[in-house]
Image (cartoon, rainbow, N blue to C red; front, side):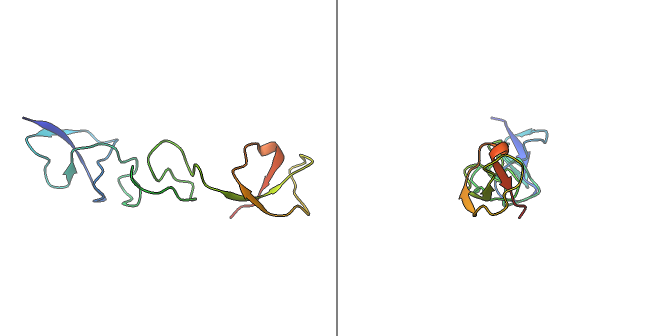
Length: 103
């Protein structure tokens, strides 16, 4: 029985979701039987990868840096500045009430 396979350029066991499938009895060398890798140029990125605070969708779920606590200063008066406010951690939900520090 023939099956589809996709290239796995980074060797992480996850096939390139943007590549065309190859049909055959078994995956050729460098191919796997799934197309779930959202960045086949980075072995650290794939559906089983942990999410890291790096601006990348590491776990290929469509969200970037989700669920991570980020350091920020509260912007209590909404002026875009947080002078004098102490650092806190969390997942800020409103840009109008948070002033971010670039890391």
